[in-house]
Length: 411
Image (cartoon, helix red, strand yellow):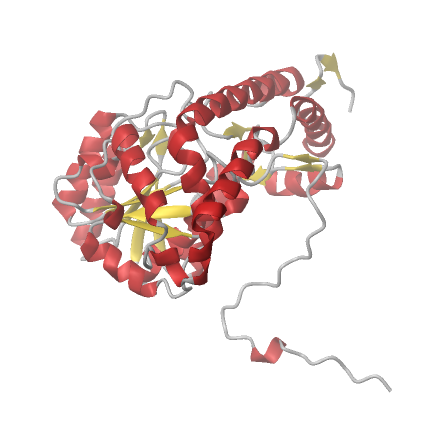
């Protein structure tokens, strides 16, 4: 007689997330997530780097922290300090940087440092799903600020902060992705950054700056980071190697004043992020990052062009979008009656995966007809075929587009 399997369900605490689905592989045409171009991973350089650094320093793997301490491998932090100064104007040292397991752990650690249930934070209306999901699980009240072509609308932020002050509420932080915003691809200009900093200082609210896509600006030119522009050290800055090198390495970083970083470090109780990944990145990036990233940008830009051409061909004017200034995503608006949550299900059944807009916005109604497409991972042929399939599914489900591949379709 076979015993019944143990039931763990009654033991789960209140508020536990729903069970995860089993992994069945990527869709044939995958436009989801933050996956990058597999052909652009600098594989040969990484192989050389791992051999070199292991031969030189491999025995330090016997020590937690590689003899560099709990903040992460010092040569990687030194590389980052120089890079952040050169690219974003950030004046910091290796001791101002904490290496973490990807930007998701950075989000978790900053949230654990600053937030409690019932707190209020301000975010961009359309923003990173990973950030929104975490705030929801923490029981935090999230206020979304609309965006325009220059990022977060500062006049709406000013009104929101004034209203919150009248109600006796001080937000715990303002979360922003000012440099190649996710999902819209906008870049906040320097004048607006100064206004944001002025408001944050006026109302006593810190800024949480997510800078994960700043390396992927098409022309390679970016405004100063908010962290570099603050006069009151009220900015926490995070970044990642996921988009510039490879997401599966799971290496990110936090830059913050020691008063904040020391609190965050006290909560990082995992005995350190993956050491081998840090060693390889430091060994590879120090001599090669400056030549690798421009090549990566050119490849991604070409894929964006293919995606926009495919959307124009298959959807025509029924797909509206603004050309992003960098990154790996295109934020697309379909006609108002298209429900992208339903489109997601139908498209997935046809082998196409998309990110429905409501998952990336604080305003579910506004984002209901929008979707986010990642163009980095699929090949040019997969982009063309996938968008053609998506258009056919959309036409069957919602009657748009009426033309597919410039051929009139009959219902």
